[in-house]
Image 1 (cartoon, rainbow, N blue to C red):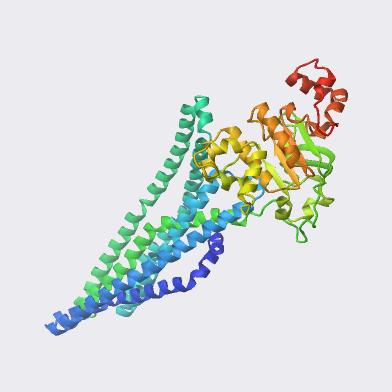
Image 2 (cartoon, rainbow, N blue to C red; image 1 turned 90 degrees about the vertical axis):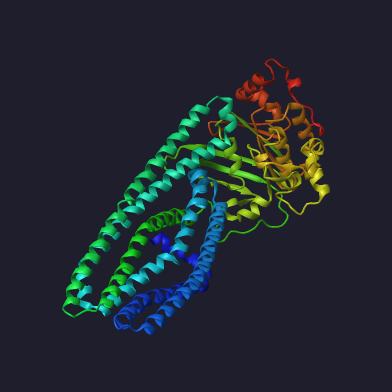
Length: 591
């Protein structure tokens, strides 16, 4: 309930409309509670005494109250629905913005499937909970309280006779509600699992087909589906026992009223109208109990979902701006330095991915990072825009520790082309201008030319206005990489990070991209992470990583002479025994 109470803050902007819904509901309850009294009047003062005028006028009042109650119910439903939908909208936005604030560490720990469940299924459960609370969920308790009071007013002795039964009924309801919340929490957790399997399978459907693993994935999904179904059946089986138990209580109550009330009527202590009114109040008390218990699954699901939604909202980003964080001063040059930097993904195990990294990239310098898979290349460059924080040491941008800078200001100075080229639904131009929407068409075209993307873009239907399907499925891997490079170049960053960003293009296209980048990045610092040694030949400085440490660094010529590891990589990819002069690439600047 603590989670639910915290989320109640989302109701505050709509408290006026929610209050209106409750006021209308209260008026409707008063009208409903007056009906048994009017029935008593018809029997005792009309039918028993043969006074048809009382019967007719009282019946007319009952019809008018019923019509007015129906109109008020419509108003209550309208207000309740508006409040519930508005709260759900705000919750979805809050969750989305919270997820956007998560650092890489947070996203490493929370899977996509559970996040999707919280944004959809859990928010929907909370929406229904709000709407039910402003309608049936509040009407039921008000009817019960009013009916109990009127039962005492009608005949206190008979009301006290029913007290033990009412306490037993309340105990049954509390038992079911307490037991249901963990059951529904288990259902949502299994829905998380199902959504995770579904999301992974849809995202990797091409890989599944290429390895002929459709049967395996089908069984994996079927297993998650069976677990969800089994838990849902268990919940429904548990819920199915509630209605019979409460119906039994209602029937016992009716027997007590008719038996005890009948004896009092025979003795002249109770009128027939009072017995009928008392019976109606008993039904008005017990029927909402049955209804509320049947709706307790909504409450249990809502409370379980509140816990899961609140868990995301309470999650703090692992990487946060310091209170004294500041923007970069004007005239940023793009010098990047690592001073004895070590890093680990899991502080609990403290298994270092990087160890004692010390290097500097001067403004305008191209630094290539080479190494085997798992050597820490991508991890190293991810520390520059502060996607992660170093475990020890520091990363400096223009001599300032990146932890002292505002994240948004830092990242605006850095252009990044990640390993996986992500495209969004929209147009080609929108994807290229994603980081700088105000760019002119000429600037967009210039960036595309530098990335060797202009030619294939112009071959599309619509050119730069051509559509990009979800995740860029209508483009090849190389085309997506070139659009991603153009997107990074258009931001005109002081520092450019290319994380194996030309792996999906052929060597000729890679050479053309490198030629264009030489001019485009003049005066800017660039980091090039690569698997292919042909990608790093022109770099001013090559860093060879091995097991998270710098095994060698220098120019291509220097490393060929001094680093056995580099020479081994070079020979394995470009051929052993190549003369040193042939292995040294020509540079326009003559270096």
